[in-house]
Each structure stands twice: as structure tokens, then as C-alpha cells.
Amino acid sequence: MYRKGSSFKDVYIIPQYSEVESRSLVDTSTKIFDNLEIDVPVISSNMDTVTEGLMAIAMNNAGAIGALHRFMSIEDNVEQYKFATFRENPQEGTYVLVSIGVNGDSEERAKALYEAGARFFIIDVAHGHSKQMKNMICRMKSRYQDVKDPIRIMAGNIATPEAVYDLVTWGADAVKVGIGPGAACLTKNVTGVTMPQFSAINECSKYLTESTYRQKPQVRLVPIIADGGVTEIGDISKAIGAGASAVMCGRLFAACNETPGPRLNGKKIYRGMASKDAMIRIKPADSLPTPEGDSIVIDDEPTTAAEVVKHIKGGLQSAFSYSNAKNLIEFQKNVKFGSRE
Image (tube, rainbow, N blue to C red; front, side, top):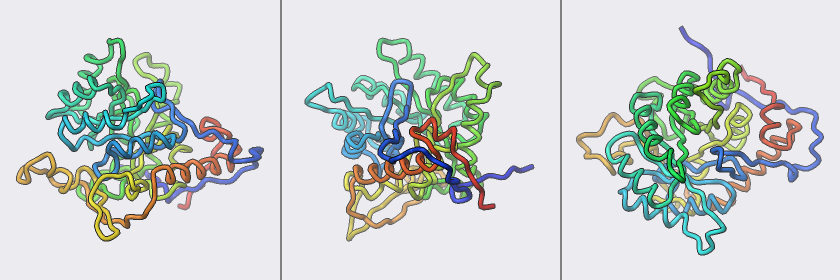
């Protein structure tokens, strides 16, 4: 038994008659959570070669948002969060996503980050449709929901409608979709497990809007965050057209000046968090599982997060205008896709 699936490269957006007179009139804003809106629907990935404090600041200033990785000590994690969110004028506000896992020091890390001011959490594991994820969401919600300043949880990664149902029922406020599509992800190679990303986003988002789903009192309509598989800006348009509220990107931002990680002779390392190089930072070498991530050498191009986000916004504004849409909701309603198959 099998079913067909499409990656971003397998589909294209069909141009339509448009009354949008200028792409500058197009609004690309979106909600990551019910209480968190950003101007450009993109998140810099929570990878140790992509987002630490400096990158999070740059993303926030550009109208997007950064997700701090968790592959550091709790103390360093708190310091990075404080650095990223410090403002002399508190009215300016800074929004940062923080990451935890489902075991080890995860609850201690969550407590320290919450006490430092963090309210937007990513519970992030390779296979999010699991008992460990269920238990962690329930523990986090039990501890930090019925308080004066409750948290929001983005949970993943998953790739099926069944997983969406379960994660939302368990308490997730946003769901991260993507199993194996990333350039630095070897899950599909090592295990054979994956789901073509365009189809995964489309199926998960459609399930959320189906009337049979929304009639169930224990579930809510939450944002879908597409994570992985983006190789060019047009893929972000396709992901949003397929139903994502925002897209998490690693490779597009990996060479930005603000990203962490060693640089040498015009080259930089970009790596998946299930790679041997990343896992060895927190586990002894003799206890590492089979790596499901890769380390990739990329050109260290002189660019900034602000420049990348600017180009992403421009590309999205053009894509929306090709579908006669002035905002994200209109785009998802109007967009038409063709298939190369």
C-alpha cells in the first residue's frame, strides 16, 4: 500500500488575473501563535550553525523571528535568550522562540528559560508523533498554562494528519511539519522514512480545516509551520500556498553574518542537529545513535539576515500578487498549483 507525494520541485504556482497594482501593497504578515504576529512568515532554524542570540536579534529587527537552538548548556541558553531579548527601551519588544527536547535536562531547561522570560517554546524532536512528545506537552502545559503569563508550544516534527490531531489534542499551539526534507537531514537516507514536504504540508493543513475535524471539541485550529526542504525563495511561497502559516529555514540563512559556527577560508559548516558533529556536543561519542543528519560545507557569502528576509518578503509579495492576493489568507484561498508529473 502506498500513496504518491509531491516535493516543492514537483509543483508550480499558476499565474492568474490580478488586480494587485503593486506588490508593495501586499501584506505578508502572519501569526506564529494566537498572540504572536510577525511581518514576514519565516523563522530562522533552531540549529547550532544558524540561530543564537545575534541571529535572533537580526531576525526580529527584520520583521521575522529566530528560534534559539538547545545544543548548549542551560546557563549558556539562558544567556543567549537574555542577550537576544535585551532592549534599553522595553516598549520595543523582542520575540524569540526557545527550544527544548523531551528528555534529559529538558524540564530543567524549560524552567530556567521560563524564569528568564521565555514564553514561546518549541518542543523539538526528530519524531514528534510519540509518547515522549505527548508526555512533555502535557507536563509543560500542566506547569505553565494556568499561570498569569502562560506559554505557547510549537511541537514537532510530524508529517501526517493523524499526528496533527494528536499533537493538538495533547495541547500544542502550533505544529511543525517536516520529516526528512532538509538538505542536512539524512533521515530519509538512513531509515527510509520521509514524506515529500509539499504533500505533508498540504495534507496536514487540509485536515485542520476540514469540517469533521473542527467539529471535535477537543481540538483547535492552529498554525502549521513548515520545516525543511526549502532551497529557494519560491519554495516558501509554495509552502504557504499549501497551507503553512510560516516556514522555518536553515540553509537560506546559514551563511548570514549573524549566524554562529566556525568560518575558514570563505567556507562555513552547516549541519543537521542529528548529525554526529552536533550530537557529540551533548553526548559521549560511544553513546551516539546512528546519525540522521549531515554536516555540509557551504560558501560563506557576505550577507545579512535583514537582506535575506527582505528578499523573501519581496518574493512572497510578488507570488501573492500573481494569485490576485493582498495578504496570506487571500493567497491560500486563491492560489492554484500545477504538477510536473
